[in-house]
Image (cartoon, rainbow, N blue to C red; front, side, top):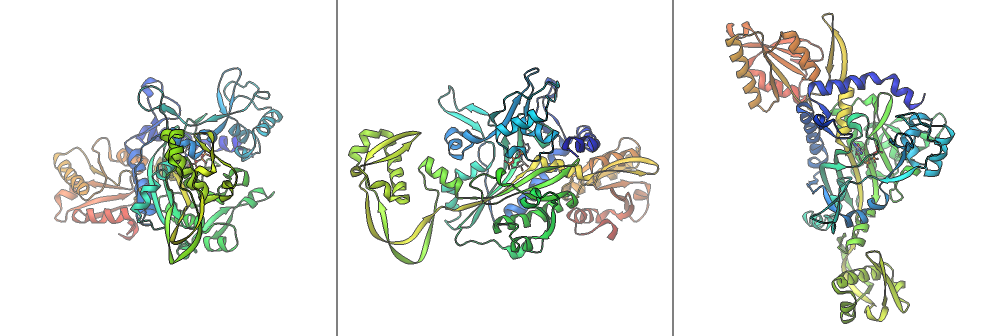
Length: 590
Ligand code: ATP
């Protein structure tokens, strides 16, 4: 079955969900008054609350519980950052434009949706062009043939100018990670120069996607939650023992390539022992992520970790896995886990001239041979003006890295893409014996990178349920109480001053206890329950005449999923509902 057949077959849930999301205030396309704009979505009151609850649980797990630091960096950064990171040259998707109607499509998606190819992104452009010709693929909008149309690379970054004029180009960050990497020289100070340490950031990222689709799954502005974990590759090891028994569904590269390959169920410990997950740090983060996804309501029967195929992986990344959730028969990427080596920090060191290293103290001082430079500033000053200091840094770096470069008459170095030749006798190059207390090491980086919007969509999709109650069809969202935007609905049974006064007082008390409460007195009680079911509110409290007349002040508490009702004393409501929200007790146990 091709991807498009699968999509058609199970379209119903997504369509119904998107409709519910709009009706109940989860999410909707932005700027509707002006016709809407592709790839931009607004989270409504329910969606914003759900998203922020998901972010809070992420922060608890990946920042607080791990002892990591969280930062909040700007979303616009200057061009040199993206020259260094490689985004300016290589952050491209494959674009194909319909010659008839001008619709832009992602060529790899066109191939994946209409052929048996599952990972067209990793194919070279000429191969994608031949597949399009071979399968006689057509424009999804007007049906015109695309067989002879060229596929081009399209850079996904949004550009802008910083300040008036165009002297300082800037870009909206395509990932939050660069905001962490560029601040490493300062962040390491906050970590007291001790590895390992982790820095997290939850924030917006921008990608000018060629064809945004599937509502908030692929947008042009979205939220990422990223962790950059900096380690000493020679010394630091993850606490694998703490996750070795976590069971996971893995879809390793060799299974994807085998004819009848299937995902396998195993534990993190076994997957590492069997060499399926090559990198222990990546294994550790998969191990802490799975229970977190489970806890916030991703259906574990529709969740797996898929290893990148060799062609998908960046050349510097040793091992990469994606967390994937199943939506309408398709697997979508929820997060990426990569061991990135020293790529990012080395690139920023090379381009900025700053120190992206940590000083590692030896147990005993060592005597070593060290290549040094002591450049002749009376030569460099007039020759390079304001760039002289950058030349010095570059010479220092080259001397450290490859002393053989200093054996000829001149040495070549590049500053801002311009190559300069400097006479070696002006560099003051020397090799000396030095006693050293330690060395500067460039940390390696392990990066778990989560997409928040896709996760919110998956949580909603997996929570979407239909059943029949009292002969009537019901739609409800089985959201986990910990992330549900509203925890309790409070209703007076009917229009009556006394009932309304009591219900309002209960709502205030529950709000004071830190619960998110909605008060609703419109329509019959059945309709009010259905409304909260659709929003995914796990509990509803109804104030009736027994509440205000009987000596024992009780209310009816109804659970969303079972629709079961119990009478509970008003006094105990804040504590009981808080415990239900935290999962400390179940409704059945009350
Ligand atoms: P894709 O292949 O789907 O375009 P990616 O591999 O480029 O995604 P990463 O760069 O690894 O994505 O970004 C990390 C996470 O950010 C992804 O796992 C995803 O959850 C989220 N993400 C990436 N692009 C988008 C987008 N356009 N809209 C919503 N979320 C996104």
